[in-house]
Length: 79
Image 1 (cartoon, helix red, strand yellow):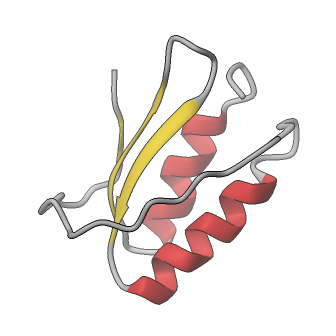
Image 2 (cartoon, one colour):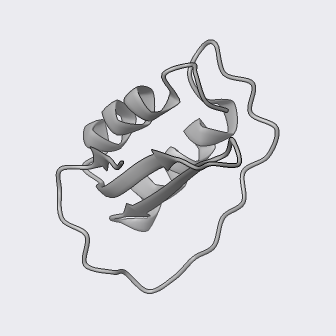
């Protein structure tokens, strides 16, 4: 969901977990993220994303595990 500072909170959570990658709003109203780091930390981030920030209404989280792309910290908000 957009408009509830999801990207800001996602960046903060990812940085706290020491993750690399990015998060962005998509034209269809969804939010997309690429998250890299230790599997435990990535799992913690995915669990957080299922709830989102306080004002969020998360309907669904689709996860696709891939080979790392080589993203480097810091985790960022993409255009």
